Amino acid sequence: MKITDLKCAIIGGSAVIRITTDEGIDGLGQGETPKPYLKPMVMFYRDMIIGKDPTDVERVMLGIRRMGAFKPWGTAVSAIEMALWDIAGKALGVPVYKLLGGKVRDKVQVYNGNIRFEMNGNEPEDYAEEIRKEINAPQGFSIIKQAVGFHDGWAGKVDNFYYGTPETLRRHPNRGTITRKGFNHLMACIEAMLEVCGDDVALALDCGPGMTVPDALKLARALEGENIMWLEDMITGDYTPYVLADLYKQVTPYTTTPIHTGEQIYLRQNFVELIETSAVNILGPDPADVGGLAEMKFIAEYADLHGIMFAPHGRFDGLIGLAAHVQLAASLPDNYIAFELPNGDPDWWYDITEGISADIVKDSHIEVWDRPGLGITFIEDEAKNYLSEEDADFFEA
Ligand SMILES: [Mg+2]
Image (cartoon, rainbow, N blue to C red; front, side, top):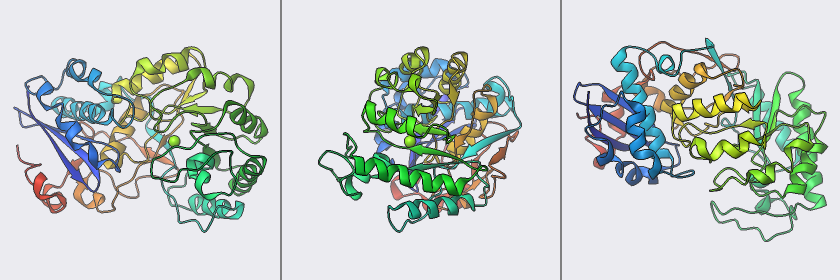
């Protein structure tokens, strides 16, 4: 089998890729929803994969993997890898999890970091109300992750949160020492959310990046005994184009609160120091950023050997990304906790695809399906209505 084309269309904000072959089998992949600007980056790889056998996934990846980088520049490589597994699975008539080593669980746990509601403000009662709504969501989430502090834009909206000059321009990071007032506010909001969670729902917190080492340790220790699920990306993370494992090593060994990072990191090599020095307790790479599903599987296995847990990032990965997460999670070792549930965004994604319904999550779990490949396909006649003129030939061979 040979790859005949690589196509990319922007569908509802996501770069969706389609790889075609000389045997009529195609494969799908998807980048994070708010990244329509990645289309030229996807097409950059076209000439590097045409003519290759898509079922030799690793051989194709060896040709393009070095031409990627940390989030968001690893997305194209990752989405291509997903599509190759989709083709390989369809060609062999097996679900992708079989090709990743087979499933070790029949249903996979998900967590919520995605379904959010409009908040009235940034006071403890606003956060408590938000958590209450998320707990009542029909998915029955067992773990809820809330953004606080730098991750929730507090530099620009909570008075005197930190010692620095807040930059509110979109995507501009803020970093610095948190004030006593800011720290007390952070604790008050977290306590209010914990009270709503009770014993049935675990609370994880996405905190940065931008916190200093002493503030990160102070927060982690102040929350000891509260059974926080994890503190995410306090120091680096999100869109930080480097790791700085050494900074996490000054926090993680000195607290019982689990420390989490990894969503922006590209490739297994960039996890070596984090894993081998136990710089964090939980890793959360994103299959649509890290380099793909096999890349995730390798990192999870290596983390497991070092006693590090695994909770993949995924909130913007869309429905094709969701299909990929399910296949991967089915095959991960016992250090797997849950992946961050993406959804069809906009809602009409559920009408233009077949395989994943809007009510697929029951009691915070998704049943692993056995359809060949990733197990999600387009209903082309419906999907065509959402293609721009430029992408009109997306479904043509
Ligand atoms: Mg995060």
